[in-house]
Amino acid sequence: MQLTVLSHQMVPACAAAMSPVLMLLGGFLLASPGRASDGSAPTTITCLTRGVDLRKERADVLCPADCPLWQFYVFGNVVYASLSSICGAAIHRGVITSAGGTVRVQTLPGQENYSAVYANGIQSQVLTRWASSFSVAGTKSGALEAAGRPLSTARPSTGKRLKKLLEKKVGNKDCKADIAFLIDGSYNIGQRRFNLQKNFVGKIAVMLRIGTEGPHVGVVQASEHPKTEFYLKNFTAAKDVLFAIKEIGFRGGNSNTGKALKHTAQRFFSLENGVRRGIPKIIVVFIDGWPSDDIEEAGIVAREFGINVFIVSVARPTTEEQGMVQDVGFVDKAVCQNNGFFSYHIPTWFGTTKYVKPLVQKLCSHEQMLCSKTCYNSVNIAFLIDGSSSVGDSNFRLVLEFISNVAKAFEISDIGSKIAAVQFTYDQRIEFSFTDYTTKEKVLSAVRGIRYMSGGTATGDAISFTTRNVFGPVRDGPNKSFLVVLTDGQSYDDVRGPAAAAHKAGITVFSIGVAWAPLDDLKDMASEPRESHNFFTREFTGLEQIVPDVIRGICRDFLNSKQ
Image 1: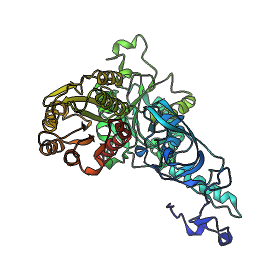
Image 2: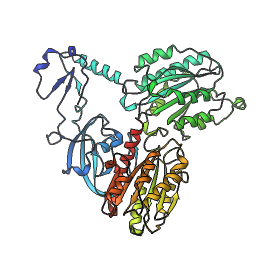
Image 3: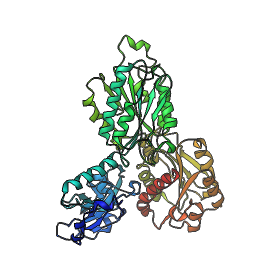
């Protein structure tokens, strides 16, 4: 573990006399891990240790800090299949955070129908059945692990102040978000209400607990022409943000909110301006009255950029004024999703304090940020299915079950991830393309409806066909492309050339072989590094165990492509 040394002057001279179980470092002290209920120390595990790896019926384990959430594969909710990562399940359950900690693991019998639930930044997956399960709970002795605690000295208040100062600088680590406040600077709002709006934004900034590892904020003013007042990178302390907001001057002019929203979506969130990879991007749009221009197109642009748009409307237009509004339904058309979560109404700028906390809670609900670009909602996955006579009808059903289990992990929609399927023998048949189905339910129904072809095996031709006819029409789209090839035997044609062409077209290929599939063919088809992009199982029943590896591989490649 690494800790930043704050100052050698913060360490009192009496520290040398402290107990050897305590390690002193830069004014902080690390305690040995909390004891288990039976007096023994908890077992230290890795981010990827699974429930099945434990040999005890009940055990206390110590999860490390800063495990990448995308690495976890978790099946179920409350009761988890033992195939799941223990630390991933503990974070999913809310027992610990990404800072790590002690977890009590209880082994349970296996079951059927492990459910999929998104919680605390982790999407758990569906699993039809598994032989054993486990549950996770907190322990009473987990307070001192991993993160350390302020040094206790003859002046304990100094340690407490130091801890508070450090926490204040770091910010709210449970609310990491990059937020642009798009404030109304038009004649609609006027100077007086403009100042009240600034006060409201300042209160939000304070409650968000801005910090180096917490939320970052910037401000854009909408009027005749948009103006960026300050960027995400400019300030990481609430007091500095408050001062910057106070200094913002009223511009006046028409309320061209659509123009300002489009400007913010396209130009504000860049690496040069301080945006962080893997952190939800949010625009909070304040509208006093109604916009002077079209806001719907700007909302579409924001969604395409993976930005979650919230609309905070104040003083909605009266019945008499509605004739002046270009589109009365402008709020529903601009927000990330028209589900009520992304729209927030305040009746007046006076007495807004009571509206601060509910809005902050929304902004910190990362699991609700449906427009954020993640591996779950920003990929196109095509499955290339071997329908040759060597597979057989019963094994073909197991292949379709594998496809369904992978597809269930992804957020399928018209603006999210998309699934396609092609079956091949000597010929190829598009079962459905990326644009045919835009809901998970319809995709899963379509997979169940695929009929077994039976015939020969021409995998190379099938890869070329899929690259051209399935990926070709969505070549210029925003999603990253993946091809999963499933085959059980030797191809009668060359696979190396077609696979290389697919790689060159920007398609990441995972090859999965069963039974007699040659390992050389699997490696030739797979993307680099080939070792992590090809899988083999002797039996079709083994496909189920490959599901989490494929999902994790897609997420890993997606994140690598963003770096």
